[in-house]
Length: 302
Length: 276
Image 1 (cartoon, rainbow over the protein chains, first blue to last red):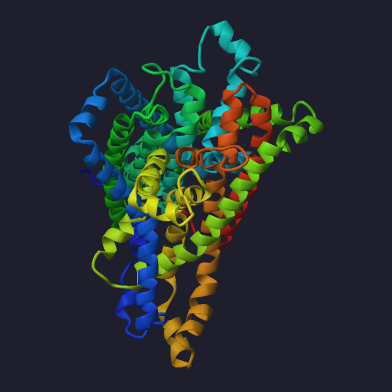
Image 2 (image 1 turned 45 degrees about the vertical axis):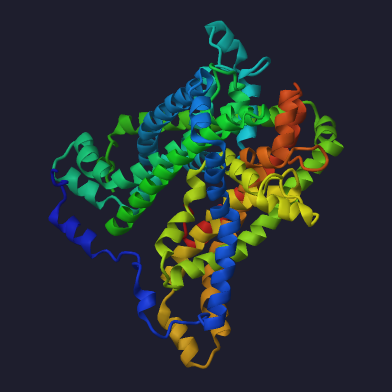
């Protein structure tokens, strides 16, 4: 790997910058044991474990137990039906699109939002955060009202002969909306943390803006960007409300993995529903392990 | 500071990039939400109130609000307790438990709902146990609360953890040396530091709970006036071809979501913390 171009002075400054306090200092101090009396400690531990067990760990184990009870062959048979495969393929395609778009938008958007000064920047910042706060069903409804019959964009779409609702473009729009904040926020956070001194140093040493971007900025935001992209994958795999409203969950056409599960539950097709839930569950556990790994690497890099 | 110092920032390129990003965000977020507000309010205030104040809509909204408030309070207490245990105690499995807390962010909420429906469903051991004591969980309100607890679990824990790590342990030692009991030391040293984080995490979980759809749709049974929450009501109205009454209740939810979001952002700005 090539060393990023950094001026010695900037590098020294970067190394001397105080980092946020690391992990272990607390435990090393023997006196810092307030709230740690034996009985209180045990009671708190039990309460926390019961809580996590009832709300998190129990449900996770229940799905596994149920699948064993249903029998693996039944589940595999249900999942190899064309509808299930088509739903899985659709989710995969949407995830790939979301990752590609958000890698570009997240990086460039974060640079524009943190490094550039322009009118309405804080409004854009707040808007970009909003998808995290809004119910997916409302997102779906908003696009139905915008793109559907009588909507503001309906005449334009009709004249172009593009079908968005209950069609593939609708699913793409829904996925892009709900995944917008992840890369943008992670990269913006890193950019604000590292400041501009390294980029300034590169520019002073004669690097063109593109060189600065590829050799200084990108290596610096790499871990933040990966974290944001992993969150993007998690959200695209799991998005339900918005793709249900915008796509309509038409079997073998606009059905995704999650809407397939929903329909299968409605039809009491439990083998298919739980099998697909397991597939998504395995994906999310794999994602989660990668997320934790990335998080630890970032902690060490800080 | 010279502009040329930043990556991708030479004059025209900068403006172009800014404009493109602004266009993307406006088209994707602002325009659809404007269409939603327009549909909700466009037929006059009277029509808006009539739609949003319809008994079924009102009961759905109320159910959403009280369950969300309940879980945000539970999260504030248990989330802080979990963070405390995970940061302060040393026990085997701590690393795994700490990582496990992030899992709900990776699991699709619909799948979370399915898991809860299996564990507490009428056919399962736990479900039977609770039902025989007169408290069915699935297709009832406790199921909604459990589903919300699952999907909002990380918010407070992840907000409080970094704060706990940053409190200077010498302050606590000073409190103890000066004769404060453990509880006093906790309330004077830690509570002021972690309260804003716990509150902002709790507000974020409240906002999230108000909008939750997938996890609730499979556990609640969605009986109007009884176990139907606001997002499920909105979905039902869309399905039955009444987008305008769906939009009316959406405007109410949007207003709540945006204000909660703004409050959480304000607290995080003030305390310099950041949620994950």
